[in-house]
Length: 268
Image (cartoon, rainbow, N blue to C red; front, top):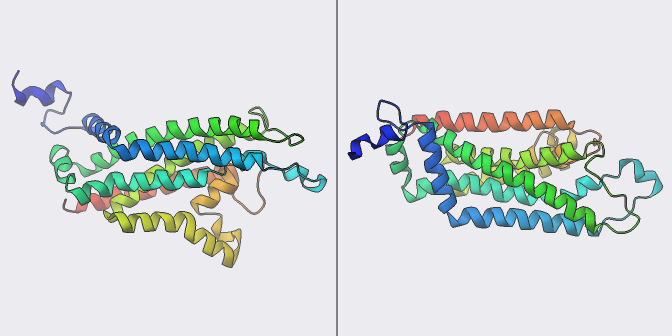
């Protein structure tokens, strides 16, 4: 069989251009061969578990007047803040790293449709971070639960809101991964993309929260994660869990969509 017939055997379109399946396969190969992928995800897992265990080990039994609002599930998921930073930065690097090295030209030569490339990156990395995110939240929950001291109420999966908090926290990490990819596509520059990501997840919520309180800050990703998604009990003056989750989905779709449109109009 000649080399010219290879794309057809791989299921490529009749035009000779590779489609989404081939783009996703290419992105999977690139992702799993990068050492930074393993180390970043390893730090996410190790960091989230360590923070969850340490936080729970230092959690004290609530006083009588605070027992109704006591939420150890929120404590054990404190490491989500670290996880989102590492996962978001890696998402940025999956795009900007190719631009800085020049390998993006080879990618676009193989897959001329740039939106397909971006969609493949989002699907592969988003899928991986969803699996890792869900796994690490559950492992952290059980490890942190075991670290609670005597007399501290232990949360259980069957308790109201606990399973939802764990699932949403894992999904949140995947949504941050998608936002990181979208921001990388918008800027194509590593330093500026990381600055934007850190700004919208950490800096702006702290600054705006300090000035105006939760009225505006509640709509930023980190505040949504800490006070809406990773809680078993609702927090006053913050978004409810489902509206917060839907807003995060909207952010991911909007940033990826904007990145795809801008990418399609630019030269490699």
